[in-house]
Every structure is written in C-alpha cells, then in structure tokens.
Image (cartoon, rainbow, N blue to C red):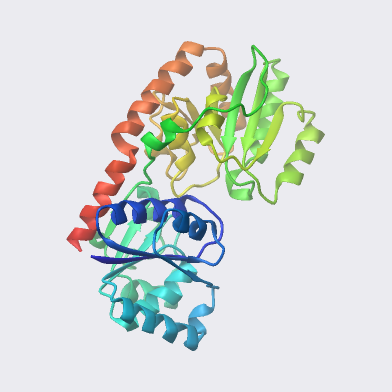
Length: 361
C-alpha cells in the first residue's frame, strides 16, 4: 500500500506525534510511506532524523485558491501514485484534499484531533460530501462534535475513533535526570502543555491560591512554553503565589518531569485527546482534570484519578488536597492508571487498529 501523510503544521503537538508514530510504524512493516510536512517544522525535522521519506510544503488557509499550487500538487500525487492520503489540518484538507481528488487518489482520510464542532457551511458540506472518504477521530468526543451541527454531514459508518497511543517501551527507557530541586516534604503538582488559553493554566494560579490559603506544603511545576507565560507569571505575582509555581519551559524528557511529580493536574478547557494524561498515567501518577471533552474517556473516576466540574476550582482543590494527604491513595491510583494505559492506550494497540483500518479500505 502506498500511503501519504500530509501535515503542514510547524509546531509539534498530538496530531504531529500521531502522524510521526504511524508513519514510522508502517514504514517498519514494509509499507511505502511518504510524509509531507511543513517547511522547517518539528515534524519534518523528526521525520528526516528517523529516515522517513518526506517533502516540505507551505500551506495557508487560502492556498487552495492558488491554482498553480493545486496543479503542482495534483501532478506530484499522480507521479507518486498514492492509494491513500491522510490529512490532519483543515487548511491541508482544502488544498491536499481537493488536489488528491483531482489526482484520483482513492482514499482521502481526514484525521481530526480537535473536539470543536465543524461549522455547517456550504464549503464544509462540499469537502465532507465530495472530497473526504473516511474520518479518523482521536476520541469519541471529537467524533461526536464533527456531526454536532449537521448530523448528515458525513456517514457515521465511515468514521472511526482511534486513540493516540503512548510508546511505553520508549517512555520507560527515557533516562531520569534532575529537573529541579524539591523540598523533602513538598508535594509536587505537575501540569504540561502549551501556555495558551485552551490549556487553562490560569486556573493553576487559582488552585495555588486555594491550597496556599489552607497552609498546605506544595509546589506546582509547569512544563511548556507559549505566549501567555508573561501574563501567567504576573497573575501568580498578583495572587502572592509566585513562589509556589515554577515554569520550566518546554520539556523534552517527559518521564524525567513526571518522576518529580506526585499529582498531575490538567486544566484544559477542552481537548481532542488529552495525550499528556496518558503520559502521566503511564508514569503511575494520579490525575485530576475537568470533566469535559475526551477526559472521561481516559480517566476512570475514583480509580485512576478525579474528574471535577469545569472551572470548579474549589472542587479541584479538594480532590488535590485529598491526594496530597493520602500517599497510599496516590500510589494505588497511579498503579491503576498504568494498568489502564497498558490495556487501552499502548501504541501497539493503536497501530494495530490503524493498520486494520487501512486494510479495510
């Protein structure tokens, strides 16, 4: 099978990791795989390092209106004789999807990783009716939101939920290095993600304020960078909890980060699939998150962690406080979280389901 993965996003995220992992797996099994990625993107750099055949591309939201770019892509697709193309972004869908259709590619798969409803526009109806032949959703919640505004937008039987898997062998083999100094009796609360509105790190400041008010010995460590970092630091300063929150910047070795964490808290307002929750559970950490989007598909309430009301910081603080005061409970939840990842979210399970999906095409 001749497969093209198309993802022009420059930054690295869950969708890019999925494309990289699946392309690598299929290449290792003898499939003919090509990855088309954004110029100077993280995905492109990683693909080259892993010896995945790849081509650079630059895509904007209106690239599909550039007839020269469309025709060049059509010619390229015809030359390569792809049978299947898997597209990740809406901008890519417009350009690569239309070009693939013109080139006669049989299977045009849209992988959607955002649990945000698809707008019921005339152009979207054209794309979903005339261009896309199959959809991969990264969670049941994402799949639900695709049809939220139009139940007839796309046939349900041609949609599949395929969770992002974690490579447990690779994660376990990462070296444990010192990330920061911690006090002897200090309980460390971890959070990881881009410092943007969606990830809700502003609620960590509120969480710190509540816990600080209760006289609890804790520290919150945040892995990630983004445009809101100055604003978040200012908020912590104004709330008087600047000494309780440490911003580490982008962290490559997630295992080393998790080794220093006792409790993992996710404050995202929405998630297509909370991959970092899987990583925390794989590292045997109890997790606390808002009861929203795909989080209930990952966390087993009262077993691997706690789901709390959206933006309900008093409830979140109460659950975190409960875990802070009960180390055996933290350890028990952590063990159950690891077992759940092994059974449901191991990358081998995801890759096997993906390969079956391709064969059924």
